Image (cartoon, rainbow over all chains, first blue to last red; front, side, top):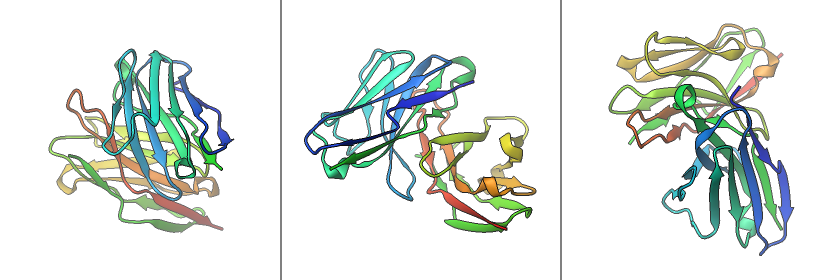
Length: 117
Length: 115
């Protein structure tokens, strides 16, 4: 149980284009989803927290107009990297937290490797 | 604000030997504590967690961890490692006050297994 998927697993795009990454909780309802960024050989950096049906809360230093997050349902959150540039290349990981027994634990997706040319 | 320290950046262990990965946290109350494992190019898999109660917790893949309040530690152990345990290990602390459910991660410990 508590499986989280991400799509795509990797994406290559040209500079200036936008890329959408999906995060889905497959077998539970995710009241809260989190988006992280991870640079090579480094830890995870929290970008934003999203609750279903409300606006995301962004961490300090994260551009909310560049990293658009939508949490339209209890099983789906999307991260859109707008006007991507090479410095946005990174490994993006989402996590989801459900209600009741799952409320205290974040379950992570497999990650999405973004490369901007 | 909470913080996590993983003092060992890289550990090398022989297959079959015992393992202990260190984790120290800073938090004003009893925290929620987690260990996650990450294989290259993959997401994070939950190994075990501590919320309350018995301070020795058992996890998947034969791992266990012990919460020691007096030392602010939550070290991960395994009696006999397997080559498949080679990965990056992250300790994380979660706040227990409602409305602040973020996880704070340590910098990770990379585990290498030698034959």
